[in-house]
Image (cartoon, rainbow, N blue to C red; front, side, top):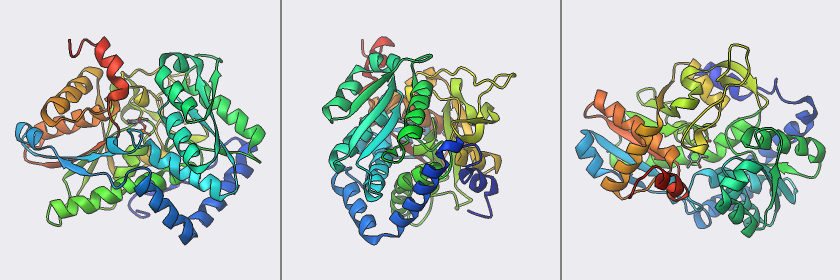
Length: 386
Ligand SMILES: *Cc1c(COP(=O)(O)O)cnc(C)c1O
């Protein structure tokens, strides 16, 4: 990948925009991660945790009914079957395992809708760490089941009341806390964003999705690859995970499916947010633009720098999918395949459907990043199932 994707590599490794006070913590993390990866005992222990706690490997399901209807071959990588119901545990478990290896007994995390907070709380409970999770007060109130889950797993939930009291403020509060406490605390970051080493670290822990998918698809397709791979993109961690398995196979098209109201790969320009330079949705005055999506996980004005780099390198395509198309795809997948996916994942399903309309007969792999049970309230509000 080094030669084919120079932007992706350079942007993933950048620390130029990190808060100066965090440089020592980031350097310590970089060293700790290198030592962790070189440690065969840790690698074996983590592989065992993925298998016996997270429920990996996850299966690849051929969506035979949709394949017939959409005139192609559709395969689903089932991250909805990971413990907790989404890919987020791959990363949270990895970062908590790394934190314990580095000698920490406490982790902090930010969370938006609460999915990463729950994953961190589960991983921390399993690994005997104390977790403190920062969440915007507004999100605490509108995502009550996740607040309860975090507390049941023994995490301390800290509501953040600044500004809009949502994800951006939660990130800022967690960052401030880390600046004050990094000598004793690890920061478990929830997506493939931020300064180096986070993007590379998160991609490492999510790349298990792509490794498993690639191996399984080679078996199913008699030694061949799919024509295209689809994943939804919020910060970009599940997408980076599955794309990592195929980025060096130039014949495989990689398509990042964004919410139309938060399409930073499709419409963004280079700017700086949360310690990284990446594609961002900005106003003409270079303020961060307001975003909208029916799915909380995609409602982010930026994207991980590795994916932004792959886009600039011409390796990654993007598709902007609106709320209605993603809802329709969710319903179609549920009716035809018996899989209720997350609203986030439904964007990737819709992206694959549109692709097959233009490329009949193609074979596609869709990463189902999570299950839809968390979205049932929204589906009810939209009048589905009545
Ligand atoms: C959080 C979340 C996302 C978005 O995060 P990425 O870092 O872009 O993967 C997508 N799907 C589900 C199910 C999520 O919980």
